Length: 241
Length: 241
DNA sequence: ATAACTTGTGCCACTGAGTGGCAGCATCCG
DNA sequence: CGGATGCTGCCACTCAGTGGCACAAGTTAT
Image (cartoon, rainbow over all chains, first blue to last red; front, side, top):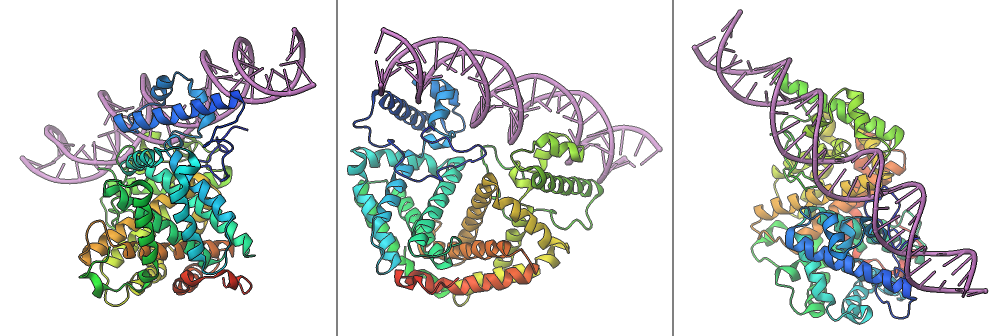
């Protein structure tokens, strides 16, 4: 089977979170696969560039594949839909997070284990991907996402799938039923919301400092989690960001 | 302008949560609008029925409009996309919730205000809609949603839009900036997750007892919220649902 | 009642995403 | 070197969704 290209009728696939056989690193692969990987990269780059320049909806897939001089059929052998070609950073990051979490000891508070794993992934993604410009590309990706409803929707669904993956993985290791514990689900959900808030703030602030910029904001957001449920209307004067 | 039919390139519209001028009740409207409303209802019914029988992806819009003997163009004047015709219950419920919340006093814990409003909406939706079969239809809607990825995705995006609406409304009343307080966002998010967990459990259990079945599970899920962040791996033996 | 308006509808042609199938060609392996 | 494998281009096709226009049903004013 191809790298992605999910089952039909599946807008957002990634039911198969995993290292994604050979998407990030392409060091010692056979020639043919390196070629395919190069095409994939070229498509993702062209897509991000063209979508940013002319807008996601206004840009035709034919324009994208034309820029790379590849047939439309080849595009869909690399990505399951137009949206997926944009979210390469998000996909890579969460894929690494899931594998990192699988290797992590779950003793102590789950919030700590999950939160710290995410914080660690933020710091190590550049090294893992071997791409110095990783955060730069991720920023462009997220900026495009921010003002494209279709992409926002796709990103949200993607995140939801990642959440299910995490809940299912952790739930299995803890011996919970497949339905999963309500509290586990809530916990994972809150971590993801913290991630969303942190990165959105980072982008709004200009997207400076790459990993450290995100790391600091994420740590802050995670720390704010326990206080959220106690929120009252009376506190509206002293706004805690 | 038509009832819905969002701006182009907007997969899920509903940026305009509001009573939806005359979608639920159609008591004393002019003849023409009642006719249109009847067509809308017929389309939604046919869509839910056909999608359930033959599957969402396998059913063509032409089949749906054929069953109602209406042109495809008319379908898109009533719904912005194929998915929207299914989620009428969800749309109605959250629309009512948002108006109910706007009328509610926000003193005390916000979690209580938001949670209780949702609980109240669950109990009053039958009366408000004037449809005795409301929960029956909602159950069929959600069952279809459960095994259709595309619809799940749409539902999630819809929920996210509702969340933004709530955060924006409450944030404005509390004098928070448009960016919103992180904690407010987290709180609203958790209530919605509680809703999702509660209704999913209700559906899995067979969808019995309509409003009361959902009400009980929702109350239970809301009560479990404060304990979620303290979750540890050690608790895995005594599974608290 | 009739004229003048508004508004929902049908029809038609069109774009663009995504799929299936097949033939050709490069790469890999014995 | 020759066959197996797998990627690619091409072509025809389905189907969601849109724009435009003519028409008819409903509404209001004279």
